Image 1: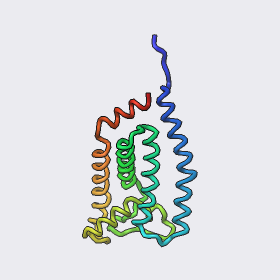
Image 2 (image 1 turned 90 degrees about the horizontal axis):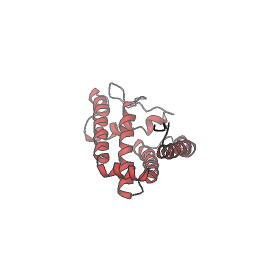
Image 3 (image 1 turned 30 degrees about the horizontal axis):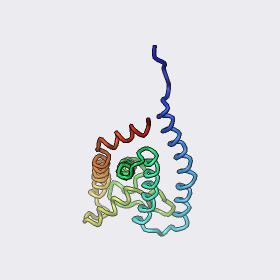
Image 4 (image 1 turned 45 degrees about the vertical axis):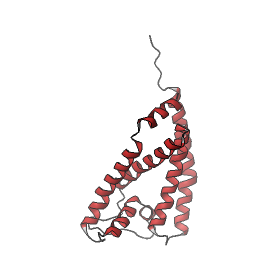
Length: 170
């Protein structure tokens, strides 16, 4: 008869890393990010977005290093995981572009200042779709999610990435 185990030792390692990361992430980076945006309310959305994403990429890179320990895998994991989070964050409210296509930046709305949908809409208007049109809403939320999910799949698709994870969790 085999012994039933609720959780394997490699799962315990992963869980410990995830819990420590969650604690440090919310204590250090999130607090710093809100303080920074409160101190600099006139910061441009592209710069706010870059600061926001740099923190995530560093975090996923550190998390990936614990899991993979090989720089190519760490890099692909960090960028791929970040792309998944961007796509999911675009899909989850608060929405920062109205259905009429207007940007909803208001004083004190820090989530929209550095929001992924704000940055996608900013890029879309550079390409030629103006704010104030319903097309802006659809391209931001449908096109943005499709782009970042595609990027995530392309970055995370390599089999050796997941084989390396299996080797390192043993």
